[in-house]
Length: 93
Image (cartoon, rainbow, N blue to C red):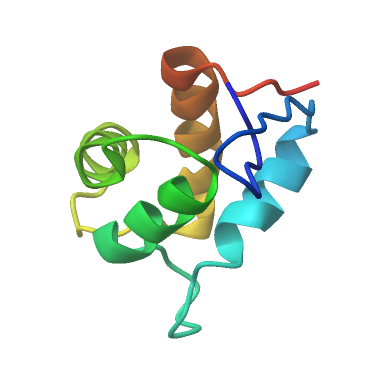
């Protein structure tokens, strides 16, 4: 699964540490509230080259949002990373 796909014709598979993937996802916290909304997750997944990013954001949010507030907090980020690596093949080393 491509981690970053700068052009549609090339695929790059780069293993990341769990912290690197968390940091990459946190960049999409556009309003700076320390949480990721479904919209922010969708944009993050789209930038990572995932198809159906809206659906994937919804699924990830349902899985990792332990307190049910509709956001992925810092405390829930680890579960999001585990889910993404298990379901979508992100390579975490």
